[in-house]
Image 1 (cartoon, rainbow, N blue to C red):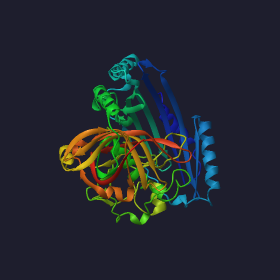
Image 2: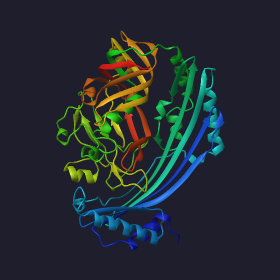
Image 3: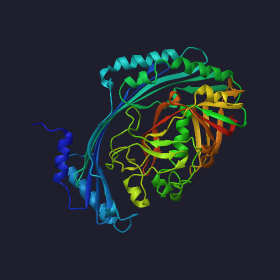
Image 4: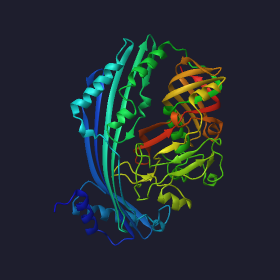
Length: 481
């Protein structure tokens, strides 16, 4: 009988186990392929493969990690010894007694739901698709740059523990992107396909779901509109945000502030702290009563869905904010023990050579009951903004300033003039309380980004956000230079 690599690693892991309180192996194998056509010219195809394991040891209250790409029994044994050595050194200098952590002993599997696999279509056919999209983008002399791309990733992982845990997961991701840059005189504008936020889990069927081949004409038309558009006006007004801007708003001013390790101070040296404190959970009015946010890694098509996190905790849908009240943080097993409170299954690592930390996964704003027409009709004077292009937020994830690619004024309940260089600013602690209408399920889009950065050393990871359109009142809006 021929063993699979996972079966071989499992046998080798149990052959080299040390006499410690706890030991785990997390194996990750990743394949990436990126295709890019720019100005109708195919760029060099980028492919990569990566494989390795992370060993975690807890012993006598200390914890240690060691990663290796040498998957032989000797390689695993050396990694175990290294992790055990670090665990011994950390006994008296850790943030807690790690032996108090009871890691799950989960047994299970998860696999992305894929209808049309990446390899079911030839490389030349995928390149032809990108060429066809590029052909739809270059339709005017004022278009000075244009590109289309597909980024595919597949990840296979195996998590084993000395306490009987065994979790096998298979992930398939597709990120379709395109954009155009237009110029007239001294004015240059950029319009993209959802701000490159249409990352999904699955196969090539996701391209049809996000209308990849149908969207170029609208993106081009909106880019050219911007050249003739006046600058965004300044003032306090109602603000209607499209889903491809809402994902950034949710990500930066809800997701990061409520990550539990950040609240406990772990990110202070690198990415800042949080205005949220432990005593706020269960009582703090984060937003209006219309604000309902869930942690939901169970949506099969969403970018950061999974069955178990990287510490083996089973992933379930949980309320984070209900009727505007902050209920629970985004904290995995270790942070939950440190804080003495419940969290979620969000302990995740970007690769085999990084330890898991508290990360957003699918952080979703639940739909309300309003149509787009109802939200627009309710506005006497305001603005609709689409697609993030810039962001700035302070070290406590509180004061923010965001810019968008495209906007349209709302006057007397009607969408009127297209304006360019729109921006708005606010304070997280009060901004969400100005939420006055939430779009129904028909306004929802499922989006995701592969670029969320956090941790020392840095880890860039996938995050999903499903959100409807939302209307906010009395927001400080201003035009860019």
